[in-house]
Image: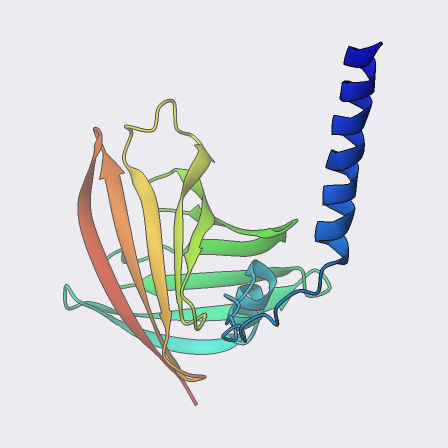
Length: 184
């Protein structure tokens, strides 16, 4: 009986201590510095939609080309069509679209592969966006040559840069940077 009374007293003191702690006035919290949110994939998709129009590009390897961006399917897809001196008489396409809270691109390449890349990181200001390989078609294994990542740097409404990497046999083969300017 004495043991049961002690147990009841300990429980009562515990409950009283919790109630006292909850009722005690709290010290004012220090002001929290404003946290800047990183832009969402939907906001980045808006930047791709804003590219609608005609562009000229110059590669770090010296060749030039043209690209056009078009928004289709009730605003749900951006289609990039590109033609470059590096691939005469060929056209490539890249399609950008949201999949829930992520942004995907599918690149239809002269390498006869269709890699899908997924947004991997967004710079704090939303100007630098990195996509990395997710999966693809016409790829028996990831080690077959394909475009594997791309970094976009938005430099304003009339300029941007893309930096593409090609992956083969377990390693990145080359990185190519293309600077684009809007054709007015």
